[in-house]
Amino acid sequence: MIIKQRTFPRDIEQLQAIERRLPESHPQMPKVKEHLKTRLSGHKGELALNFPLSYLSEHYHIFHHLRLYDGTHYFQIDCLILTDQWILIVEAKNIGGELFYNQRFNFLSRTWDDGPQTFSDPVLQVRRHRRQLQQWLHLKDFPDIPIYCLVANSHPGTSINTDDPSLDIVIRTEALPEKVEEIDRNHTGERLTQTLTNFISKEILESDLPTDYDYMKELSVNNSDIKKGVFCTGCQRLAMVWEYGRWKCNKCSHRDKLAHHPALRDFCLLNGPKITNKRVRGFLLIKSPTIAQGILKKTCVRYEGTKKSRVYFLRY
Image (cartoon, rainbow, N blue to C red):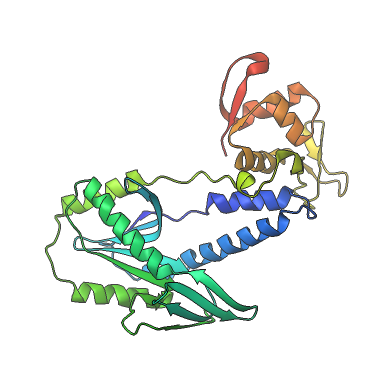
């Protein structure tokens, strides 16, 4: 059964908001696009796990996209499968081309249409995550549970080779159910009680700590660089104007009472949930404090302060 569902990553939404609102000529736009391309490819690899995982029976506890703390470092796991006998960590990849896992020097090389490339070693990464998960179990005073790990590549146009004939943890994603059956078949050891298995499952879920990404800072993008205004929900152009209780596009004449919601979500993704009347006017390009206050009252979950010092909290 799926204990933690996979959701669309918020860091990708943040990158999409930056790409949407950054001028095409901005010097950081190539980096934004490259980051977004990489993250979307990684997410595609994670999504590819859904179908093979659907073949597993209900007694497997499945967690998607975890971030745990081992007492020293945070670590992320694309997919974790918990049973009453063992744990499996799956590192999801979506890399095409001719792949070579160099286990002597721990790197992954690829030959592809755009030439040869070198990546950090996913095998090294997933084995490190195994050690960190073992440390996390110790911190929680859980018994030693055997932990297996896999690197699952979902790209259809890939071939896999290595200099280590014993390397058996790199698989094609579609082979995941058979690999799980193999682990079950070959594993020997005591079973955990159902109560303890459920308790570990609950503790994993409660210990998950999502990351607060700040690509604006990482990519050196200033708020002054970001295009302001409400995108037309008809033709997608900037910027709609507030007129008689609704937004109007002067390009295509489309009207929409709720067109400010995507804009305020962009603001939240780029700046966090706190916003003031002045900032909402500057971002939505409206002049009236009264209109801005009306929008904020309907959109925000709560506020703090009074009058000009009031801060609202967006719900996105």
